[in-house]
Amino acid sequence: MAERAIPFTAAATGSADGVSMDTPARGSIWQIAAWPETFETIESDLAKVCGCAAPGPGKALETLDGHLLIRTEPLKWWVLGPDGAECPLTPNPEDGVWLDMSHDQVSIALTGPNAAEILKRMVSIDVRDHAFPNLSFATTHMHHMITKVLRRDDGDTPRYEVMVMRSYADDLREITQHHLHHFGH
View 1 (cartoon, helix red, strand yellow):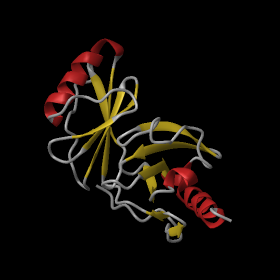
View 2: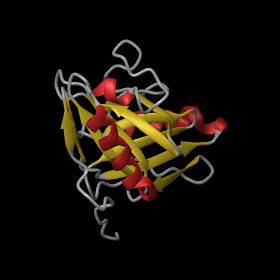
View 3: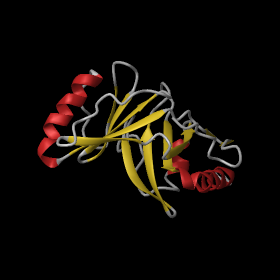
View 4: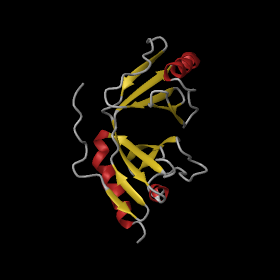
């Protein structure tokens, strides 16, 4: 596997009143997709190999081995694990496909009681607790970028991982730092 360099040209850190920004370790990202006629088979196989029920649309679940299984689209799932983790399910081409997305996505995490206040200024989804609880996932837009948001709380502290394609790493960093800078002013 090719070595992944840090995608940001400057540190992706910062803080404001009740929110901090950092760069979480990305690890491995595997995308698994089913064909419409094989959806139930792939979903069942994923649940079996991951040791948990397959999550519904826009939801994530922790697997028995500490990975995160996310239903990202109607026929697709992502599996997030540590660096070097193998894809837990490699379907036959007649059933579905799998793809290593580890080099494709970068993320910035917003953590703290005011994390949703910053995030709602940048994305067009409702990130309030009742609409976007812990282990929720959505695809949206931020400025000119297709953006994925994963809520993955740190205990009782809200934490949102905002992901974009690697080529937009610095755009994500600059936009987020800009909003942090102006938060509360």
